[in-house]
Length: 293
Image (cartoon, rainbow, N blue to C red):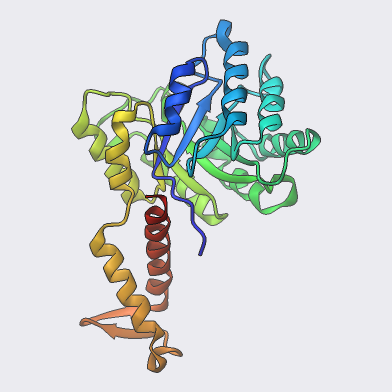
């Protein structure tokens, strides 16, 4: 099982050259070099040039490098896409994906520009239409026209803006949308990354929201400041006890006498083959995290 950790996904504004360079040194699993929301209109062109140069220069090590472009229907999006393709990041993040056709359009444009197959598409899940069309958007990944799609990124700020929902402790106003994205993503093999936490002074609230995202099934969290990295990485990593238990389950099913069994007894509890499959993922993610160290 091959898994890429995405516990921490840090946004860096493309207009801030110093921040872009700093991203190469931070303990983040992935970095999103942003050309969209964090960049003022009069800085768009400079940001595009800086992001292209920093990606081309390399030096990010094991960090996954993602470029968020502006919307393809706007004045900057297609030029952003062309500049990103020219330097071949790991992925390109497309904003406001609201229907499957948005994925197909992005894939077709990458193909037209000659992007290598290694360049994937991440889709921002941030509009009411995205919620209503979640299944179709995720299903795009299963057909050739949408084959590059690998990740949903929750845009909770935009969802709040578009729906007029309020941010409340526990995100009860957003839970249906979060779980819809997770269910759709999992149905078609996509990773799902949680939205940002806006209050940098509320460490307790941030930790609670990370734990909630993990418990819902998110793979990691998007972040707006390096100070959030430690908590996100710890929260979305399996604990030592979880890894030990997973290895024990796999070892038990590997015994010759259990090879053909669908259910076994282990330490007084019933363990099914599905638990072994879950254990495989826990071990795989733990090994992938250890390999980054």
